[in-house]
Image (cartoon, rainbow, N blue to C red; front, side):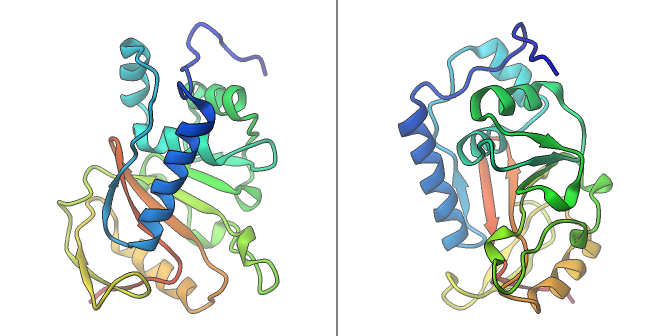
Amino acid sequence: MAIDMTTLVPGFNDTVHDSQRVFRSLLDALSRPGSIVSIDAALPNNHALRDALAARVPLAAFASLIALTDYSTPVFMERDDPMLSDALRFHASAPVTRHRDEAAFVYIDNMDAMPPLDAFAQGDAETPEDAATLFIRVPSLSEGEPLVWRGPGIADQRSVAIAGIPRSFWCERAALVAQFPCGIDCYFVAGGSLVGLPRTTHVEVS
């Protein structure tokens, strides 16, 4: 499929250094589960294209996917988005797949249309790193129902209030946590920021 160059969103201003900055921010988010982390990347100063992209995909998700993906990491998108697909294929040579179970990275634009978590790759005992990493768009990282998170990277416990996540998601995830080291790492994204949820974190749902 040809890439529409007239609507192609520019990538990083400095591909190497900006990708490294995003990658460090993503590691920071997973090492401190529940903390809100800004993705400080030098995205292009083309305001028209930035605004067109931000209306469809959170800038934190865009920057993260461009930084993490390459030709060997298929990406699954819950909703077809030619602008994001073209950017991934052009800037990262990343293939976009319609097969959920083969995706290395997943972008979920709408939680209401999200497939069950067990539809995605979870790795196995020998290769847990083959599990998918999910980027999930939410309306807010601080205005939802407070839930208690515990696990590595959290001193005792942390109250996290991400909006727009149904209880069914937390129940599905609780079943996966018991299968560690297999499992799925998630990032919740809103605007230019995100919250990391590694597979090692336990979330209490009453």
